[in-house]
Length: 234
Image (cartoon, rainbow, N blue to C red; front, top):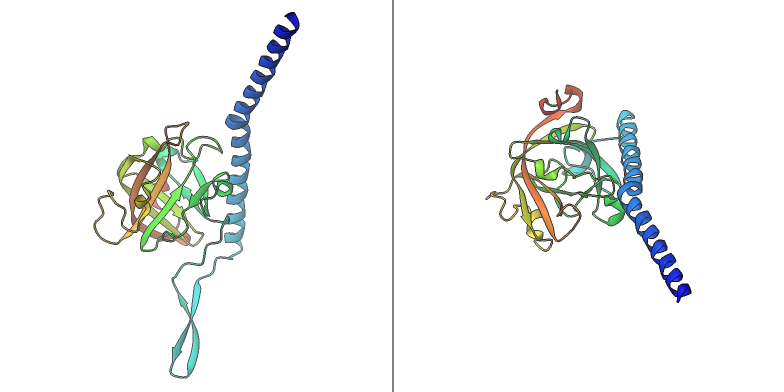
């Protein structure tokens, strides 16, 4: 009987230790790895931008029998898993900045914010939709419930600053409510096409039964050469 009790006690201790290690991994180690990955991606973007690797898009224009190359303002294509912009949300503190990469797979969300494929590109007409973890993997959207209408969400792609202003949210819904990232999002209050931003995260803090949503409109743009937008000036 003593052997059974001792074996059971040792098993409970082992299971308890494994649970503690798992919690430590979820709470600490995923955050360390995510913070490192996000810093690396931001450094990567700054290096690219400093080298002038962000180039205007071009297209072929045909005028009779003549073919010429002309510069257009259209965005460059996004590639899955690659960062293409940095987001700043002053409400979260002036040191808060996160990379935005293409695609919402787990591998992308583990390293920062994720752009929903198929939604509008940054600054373009439609709905530029971005997801982020509330907890784990660096807790990028931990303070999501603090967002309020009028708050600024600023992004840059290395050539332009885009300042969006929140109009509605945080709005609580369920994961199956995919219409929140439509070009004109349902229940957002918008009634016509525009240049919108949607941010999404999980709710509750440690669960995923619901989603929190905020919607914003593009308020202004500013060239990087002109300096930071007013929303980022302390």
